[in-house]
Length: 252
Image (cartoon, rainbow, N blue to C red; front, top):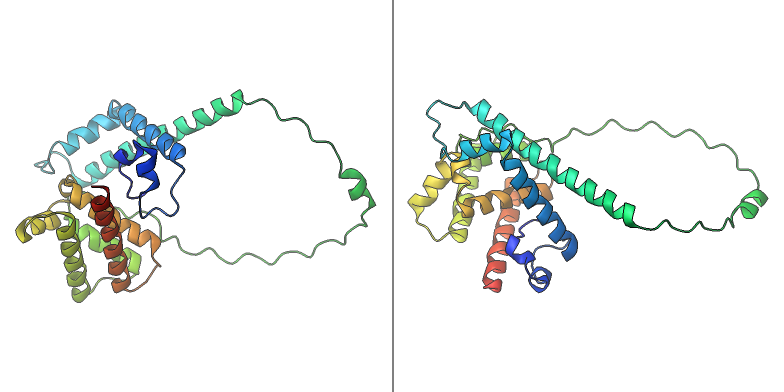
């Protein structure tokens, strides 16, 4: 359900007209997934992991030495894992309840045995060739420091996607692309955009426009090709930001 706001699930017509979702879930399934996610977030907030994450977020990214970057990463990871655990448990419980309420299907008549018995015996199959070695897993999440800048985080993600260290020219190109797209998502000045790009990741993501930009960057990497040129990644990022802006303008 990428680029899908909670308000679009209020009406079936608004969800059906939503652009940029060629593989979106059916409306009822999307409503169910969103409800399970909200329920899991509400339940996880009362757990110790949720309380620790809430305390970390309300510190506004300035722990003043109270929380180390490694401890902050652990707190965020534990909260995300707890939410995922609750979502999976809720989906499994709902599936079990649904299957228990369905009547058993009638047994199908056995019509194939006479045909199978009349077929000649087949020769044994030749052994299959060995499988090729598995490809390296480039989808594994990178360990990110929530207190490093948003721009540095984007550069680390881009370098992992492109499979090489970014050159100075590539870093400048990526910054220019992020700054331009942020100006499209938020009507703010250059100094404010620089403050958000150079600010701590955890604090910058509290801004809705930066959160949308970050989601578009991750989505562009997911849909792109490993080791593609940076220009292709920037082009995909521009396309996804334009899709969000176009959808919001159309709905309003």
